[in-house]
Length: 394
Ligand SMILES: [Zn+2]
Ligand SMILES: [Zn+2]
Picture 1: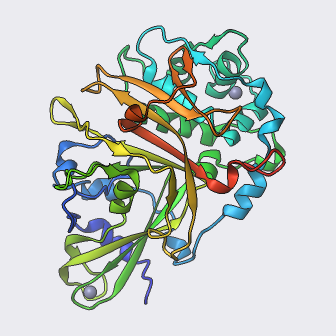
Picture 2 (picture 1 turned 30 degrees about the vertical axis):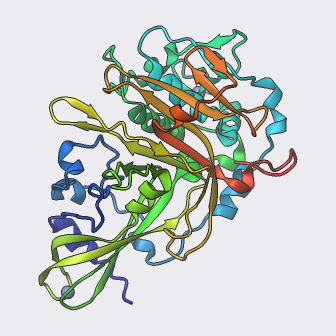
Picture 3 (picture 1 turned 90 degrees about the vertical axis):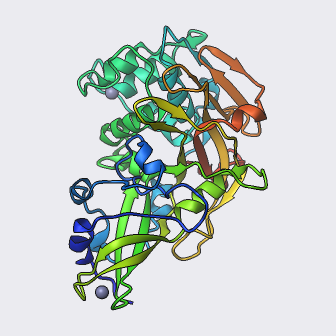
């Protein structure tokens, strides 16, 4: 098979239109943009304009068909033990003065990732509105029974984000936080110049397009940190879809109509097969439940969260990576603007136990019904859990 990196130039001038052979909604062709899903995308119309796609940065194309598994390297860089700090950070709520649940739920979710806690611990700087310094000071290390969140919007003021005094989207908040994490200076010399969010949450998808006319194959790559999965059409049997079904659906073959082949210079409807080239250390999934058509709508159908998730059927090389469910941001309510977000996560003290963190309240109960309404889901590699106190963890 030829890996034709020049395919990108024709790729970016093609008008991309995807359909799925299954009964699902169109498969998410926009994980790179990470923008909210428009109604057009949900209904299988043009998911992303060619010009927008053309302006997207090339990420892995230059590296050809190499399998990029940096797992060992990342594990060596970020390895540490919960026991080092777990007693210092008991479960704690965050006081919500008004409409900050979108931010609080994400801060709680990420505060249950050992590597993030460690990075926050190792970071300090002189910026008074630094997201990470304040996250640590006002929440993790706060002596109060609940932390505060006033620092969140301050941290994004310069970026003109989250300043409108209204409920925002937790997915947007999550991406904004990961963006800041990628830029913070970590005082640990080993992690100098690392892109923390990409190391911990980054994944890569390899897309293979085959021209129907000359059979030439073109490969292009996508790199991202949060994987958007779409709700699928209702199963006629009444069965609820699982998060694995939704994720598997990202990796089904779809069709590009009018694909412009750079080899034979002819147009054809070409199949594109995506596979997971680099499985992330920590898998973050965003379930696209909201659509916007002048008026926000929500798809409230339940999604079952698999406790264990093996992505071998999606992997480029069929390699098995097993994840364990570690947390979720749940959305309650029928619309984006008026609903409420809260977080469920594995307890820092006892990983066998889930805790519910709803603004300032902390509960050791977890409602399975709530979990069906998850909006953001976090999985960690199974090898990093229940590993005893001395084994490395991420
Ligand atoms: Zn700082
Ligand atoms: Zn061709």
